[in-house]
Amino acid sequence: MDVEILARIQFAFTIAFHYIYPPLSIGIGLIMVIFEGLYLKTGNKEYEILTRFWIKIFALTFGIGVATGIIMEFEFGTNWAVYSRYVGDIFGSALAAEGLFAFGLESTFLGILLFGWNRVKPWVHFVSTLGVFLGSMFSAVWIVVANSWQQTPAGYHIVGTGLHARAEVTDFWQMVFNPSSVDRIIHTWQGAILAGAFLVLSVHAYYIRKGRYVEISQKAFKITLVVATIFSLTQLLSGHSSADG
Image 1: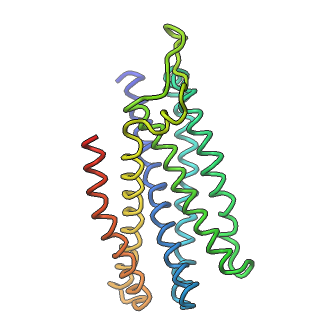
Image 2 (image 1 turned 90 degrees about the vertical axis):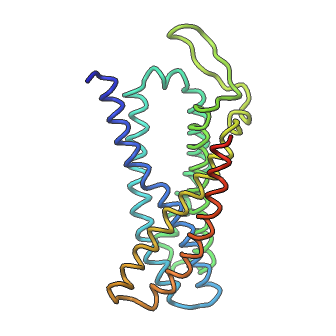
Image 3 (image 1 turned 45 degrees about the horizontal axis):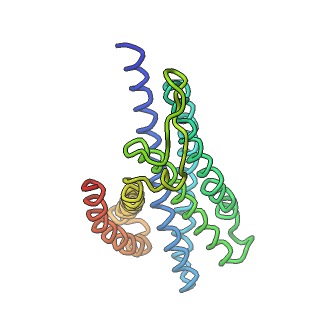
């Protein structure tokens, strides 16, 4: 087993473990928005309890996702230094956009989401929950854009030769909206929402099975089942479009 194979194995384990958590954050984020929106609309305390409970799980998935994501980015340089140098201008622009527009949005509202209960007005807290969810969605956009560019590159040219060759962006929007990016983004969003929804369903199904918090769990289960059903159907369409493209 040579160094390249070991590097591939290490990176595969890192990215496989990392990819568990960002999709869960997106899916749980949408469920939190729904629960808190229902709480604001109805005033039913059960929805507040559900929102508070899933905020704790969201914080855990978000934190692990950030930590494993940092390790993964380091491995781009340690395991694939030549490739990183070759596509650094492309990846750099996408990752910089993620940091500015997406991760910054999440971080801005995350503090209010976690510590804002009874400190800010309910609608302000709801806006922060929505902001964190949208931030996680935008984060997915830029990561998928970078991955899609590797499959269907566009908006770039090669400068230099040999070991000094590198890819440079010639048209940022062509790079972002490369031939496969939109289909992949939509498919990834829907898959992430499904992952989070089925986690929520699993937890509340467990509580119902054990006879604990049955009434509130049944309510959460029914709402989340609707979300899971809708996105299970739309996922088929986006998956077909992505594969067909």
